[in-house]
Length: 232
Image: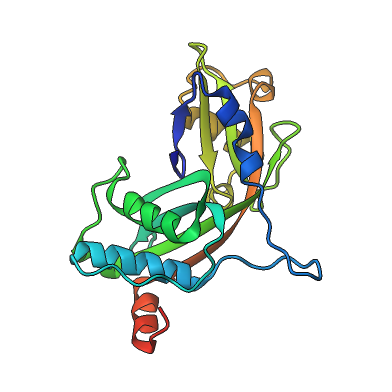
């Protein structure tokens, strides 16, 4: 199921799917000596640029990438210009092989994010691509059981009409916005369509799942330099 980086979702009768999604996403890769191996690499973002450029110019798809094809939840984010304005961001909490997952969400986030018009060829040189690989999903004890700048959040709550809703922010959002934990939670609830007063009692009623991510960001210029070196 695809998610915008700050998407809201009506969950209705999908309780079991949404209550347990993270159990299949709680992935870590470790060396034999117990140290965690880094998953993310710049090559993933280079691959996204290659996919998008090939699509926009109607060229042959790039060859199969060399980075790991292990399965993880992931998001692809496009930003544009010197001020890095959001241009598209879509991902999934389901585990997907990285090769096919990046292919799917590269194009979805660039061309089918309903908040924006599709990315054009003229915009390509001004783009920045971020890939986020999500790990370490855990149920929070309460709405404050997470750390700003470390954890992403997925919340589930009941709106005024009695419908279950969800919303998510990637780990960097709260820190970039300069929000406190309460401001972050309240913003997520508003994103989820909650229109009433947000009291401590309301906050305590939400279900919080925290997660972490590994993220890499590259510019179009970095991508082109890598292609010229033959490393993308």
